[in-house]
Image 1: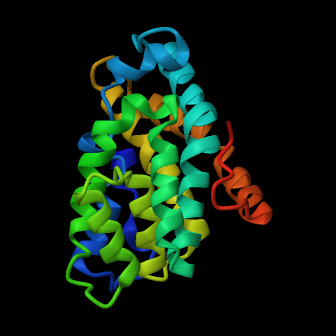
Image 2: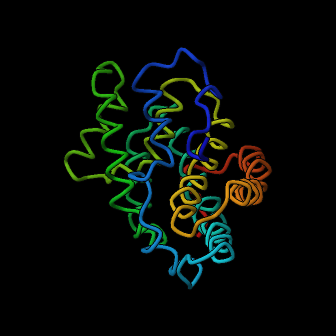
Length: 219
């Protein structure tokens, strides 16, 4: 089993097809920018071997995942629970202005917009419909992190488990994409994965305990 095949059974097994598909998209190749584009920006070197891969994953975790993406999911979840569509769109625009995410824009939009469109049949969900219209009208970007936060709220899924699953699948997706080209053994991949995800649970617990304000994404 690859790192991106972590089980959706963290959540209810009766999840609908669309809901399960969104979980399966996390960490998939189309949901991630190419390593060649972002690795030098984060760790000042290309991913060529196990050592540089470890440095990249740690840099991604510390520079993007923990300070930006997880707070964004949490904030989007809160906006969705409270029906705050204007605040959700404002958060979307704030992320669009964050230079740390510039390399993620196209990959994030491709997944986020596709999955958001799958919520179109939920006519009675005012926030979902208004956010979808804002994305289609180019008023918002449709970041996949925000769509995931809305998704967790929409399906009443456990927030803590969702944040941990997002972290594991995203870090695992980068690991899977690099492991073939640099020819890492399964044992080494498992060791790297265990090491890189080790701090995530404590960080998620801390994030939830602090309950950061909706737009308080670390600068």
